[in-house]
Length: 79
Image (cartoon, rainbow, N blue to C red):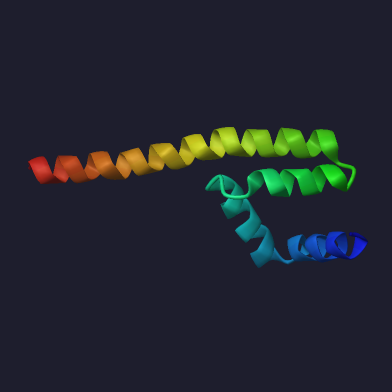
């Protein structure tokens, strides 16, 4: 288990892997696994706060972005 923790920690040290982890959380795919890993490393309250804020506001942003593209397509189609 300690080896798995070291591998996961190393993955988040690389910028590309960290961005991928944030993208996974924003798409709501595997965010709870990431949060549980952070809780297990001893950063429980920070991890819960970060991931809940990221899921709530990130999902809201993604949803608004998708709706804006759809509305733009409908507006272009009507004209």
